Image (cartoon, rainbow, N blue to C red; front, top):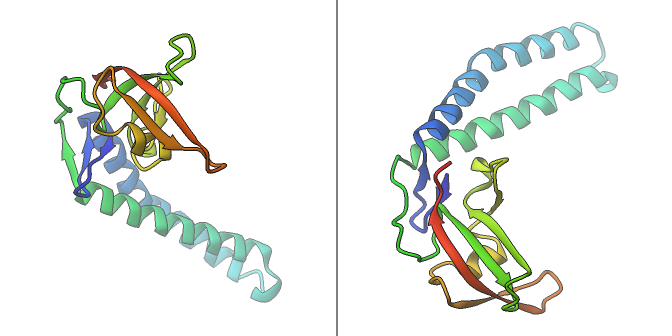
Length: 165
């Protein structure tokens, strides 16, 4: 899954189905389960000193936030269209970079939303400093990005291929 600049999120068909299933579970059976937990905790008495009640309410809040995130994500999803294999870095690409032009010091990552993080390859958000720095660059070009300490770092784009996950 990848974010594009116009707030559309590209998803593989598999990722779309996984997120859709998560949404259906959270907005159905999981809501019922959390309601039962809250009701059982209420029956235990004084709500001010009821840790189980407060924990269940907090869990409910997190669950409702995730439901809203999934709804928005799926509403703006574009399924099945991978980026072009043209060597230009964009969301949905597996990118290999060399730090400071040192081709022995490289990393390979998927430029995509954390929602689609993969065990196969590390994932960097297009909104991260590195993601912003490499976006739109072509293979062979140098890119700069700001480190957390405020200093600038440079990398060279070695490869950029569409993710085939």
